[in-house]
Length: 125
Image (cartoon, rainbow, N blue to C red; front, side, top):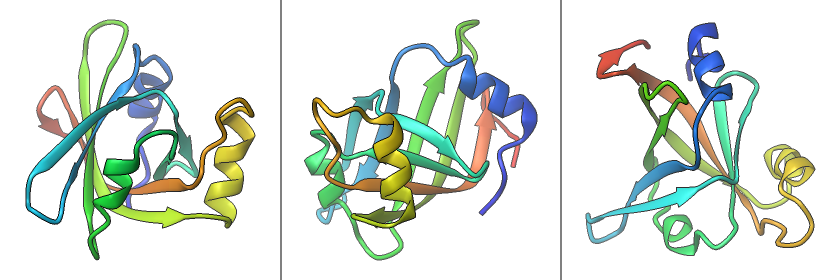
């Protein structure tokens, strides 16, 4: 796991709209979704609420990898890659419940442990 550099944290805080999450299914095919139910945790994890992302949550292979794409308000794009773990009641789930709202509570939390970050195609970490 790698900590998100300060410049990328500022870009994360200035992101525009939802992120794109890509996972790989058991059949080897990618699955892409938009989601705005996402937050940075501990500078090295991105937590996503499982709110209607069932297909992505089913793509939980051992040592599965996810890619997240986000765009800032000034149109810079960033790609974050990392290993995915799932939490259905622990500390990441409890963190997700603090910001996910009560109308459609998340059923679990997908946790992307940051391994690599790219800014405009240039590797940052």
